[in-house]
Length: 109
View 1 (cartoon, helix red, strand yellow):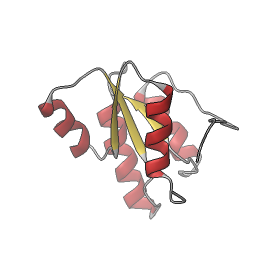
View 2: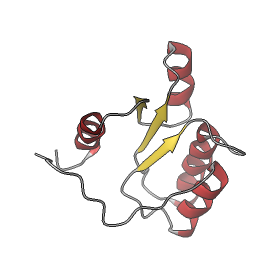
View 3: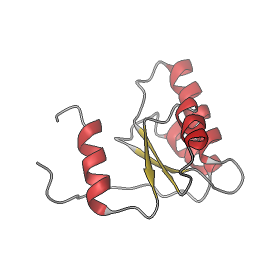
View 4: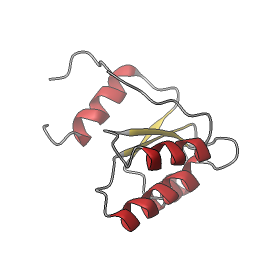
């Protein structure tokens, strides 16, 4: 059981373009991506679509993407999942909710 969350390294991006560039530069070597849906420039949906396309083109295994959003309408959730996002967490985000989501996505759970 995961009692505390320790992140040895995190990459923080201000917008979707920067997130995509970071993912490409690291050749997909991330354990998980926490993606805000609404960001300046390229939004989280567009960034996730581009990440999924990059993974397909390069043969990388898909990295789990967790969307962080204040959108709670069923239509919004549908658009989010259609972009290739694995899980959706609503804001405000609670620590235990994030830990539970990470445990579900973990190959060891």
